[in-house]
Length: 119
Image 1 (cartoon, helix red, strand yellow):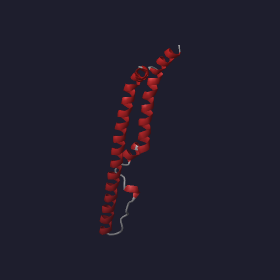
Image 2 (cartoon, helix red, strand yellow):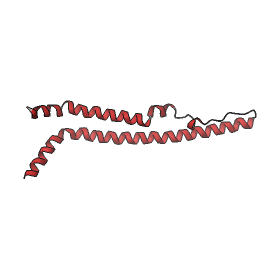
Image 3 (cartoon, rainbow, N blue to C red):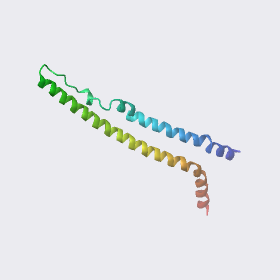
Image 4 (spheres, rainbow, N blue to C red):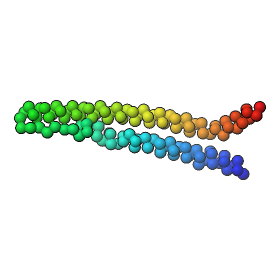
């Protein structure tokens, strides 16, 4: 009876639990990298560093240049973080898919190792 319950759990709720675990890890990774916030603020100035224009046209142009540089730096940094998040997500997804595909074989592999160790 114990073996039957184990097999029923392993190929039922256990396998579904591995899939839910993968989903939670992917969501946690997106939270860790703050992907939603990075996408919303992709073109925002870096660390909110902005220059306010003065009275003259030169001050306006200088402020425009400073703000443009700040936005470009913010874009590049956020883009690198988003690329790192994408690479990490793909690697995690591949590892999770390998885990999902090998899950049904693991009890047979354990039994095979036991038999191989005896003989």
